[in-house]
Amino acid sequence: MSKDSTRSSLELLFNVSRELARSPDLPAVLPRVLTLSVKNVDAERGTLIVLGMDEKPVDAAIVVEGQLISHTSSQLQATLDQGLAGWVLRQQKPALLMDTSKDERWLRRADDDLLRTGPKSAICIPVKSGEQLVGILTIVHSTPNFFNSDHLALLQAIADQAGIAISNALLYNSLQSATRRYRELFEENINPLIVTTWSGEILEANRAAASASGYALSDLTGRSIEMLEPSSPKKIKEETDALRVGANISYVSELHGKDGKNYPAEIFLVSARIGGQECLQWTLRDITERRELDHLREDLSAMIYHDLRSPLSNIISSLDMLKMLIPFDKNPNILPVFQISERSTERMQRLIESLLDINYLEAGQPITNKRETNIREMVYDAVEVIAPTAESKKQKVGIQLPDSLPAPVMDSDMIRRVLINLLENAVKYTPVEGELSTGVSHDGAWITIWVQDSGLGIPPEDQQRIFEKFTRLQSARFPKGLGLGLAFCSLAVRAHGGRIWVESKEGAGSRFFFRLPIKST
Ligand code: ADP
Image 1 (tube, rainbow, N blue to C red):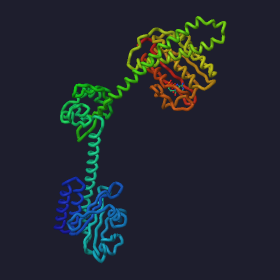
Image 2 (image 1 turned 180 degrees about the horizontal axis):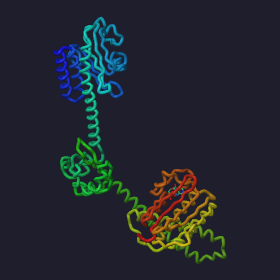
Image 3 (image 1 turned 30 degrees about the vertical axis):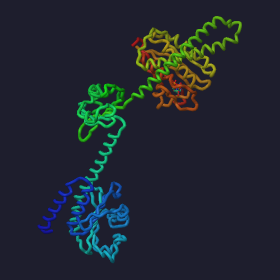
Image 4 (image 1 turned 90 degrees about the horizontal axis):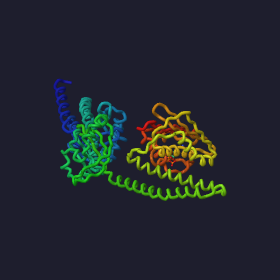
């Protein structure tokens, strides 16, 4: 190459790179690359097909005598399937066609009749960004033998620069659509969403946030989130470390509307980088309806339990009276029948007391009725309560107690019901002729009570959740229940400062433990 042609090539490439840098947008980049290429090799027409990651065409531009002309996606696909561009795509190398009429790689379409348009010459080159093929550039001249290797080298140099510009444009496009999608999700979200700085200044709010708070969007921007959520500064301070490492924080608080009314909300807080800025994103979900439903359910259940309690105590006192009046020694058949009604009413009473306790303990009320308890007596008494049901299932019940036991301070009636509950479950979930046992151990400041059965066992993944309300494991073999017994046990034990857990192997029985402090907490 002469000095002059080297200089003009460098000038050309400099112009090309300046042109390409003008706009990062794909629809602007494509015609520019193509027009530059066509012009610089004195050709008349050219095609640039942009390929996606899967090497399928995502866009294209066609220039004929300086004019952009339209194309269809089937035209592009045909060129890639059968034409020269397809050959370059598969071989990943350039092609120089001196005479298109003599080369099989040239696809003759209906509009490219040899008699009408004549033989042509063409150059087709892969456009790459690094190793990634991002497009195929085809330049055509209307006379054969027009192009030479200098043209090929020049177009390859243009294509190398175009590859980077196209791949930047593709990235820019996907960034643009991701931003658009984010904006849509933000705007259209049915939950109030607010973006603030780390100091709580509102940068953006969506429509739902405006309508929930009663403020206009323009009134919200620039103000502090504290205006809506007074505990927010404290929350940001407390959770800074967790938020910095990307944790999702959720808590329940009250939101203050413009009309002076407050409404309960569940708040989700997460840090986010938006537009290059470190921000906090707040989702303020209104839970008024959920709260109302919770209250309704609590009121309803409390009402039912209370209403059941008084007739039940009447039955119990009548049974007590009957016990004194009926001469059982003269009518021995009556005694077992009488005992059944006595046991059933006691069971019902325990159930109602436990249901009332669930409400009470869930509300965070403290245990007030604590006293020193004789654990030995409690264990014997609890076993006596379940003995008739265990006997009817031919189950053996063992008791293992150390010689001496401390007298822990607790609500004896409540803990007695916990133990009976575990024993009742052991009977219920153990087959006929199974074996059960219960026992106590103590170490230092703690006493541990356990109940062992030889039943079906509990899979490891369920061993935590059985202590939640209304959890019942799915098994046709299991008898029916409410799923409230263990929830009560867990609440009662935790309210005493203790812990409850289960160790179990499927098919090999379960052992439930609960551990309580000996001295009152
Ligand atoms: P319920 O017995 O009324 O269903 P619980 O809260 O007492 O409710 O128990 C929750 C669930 O835990 C039961 O439905 C049962 O699936 C499982 N479970 C409880 N105790 C045992 C046990 N000893 N052996 C096997 N599964 C048990």
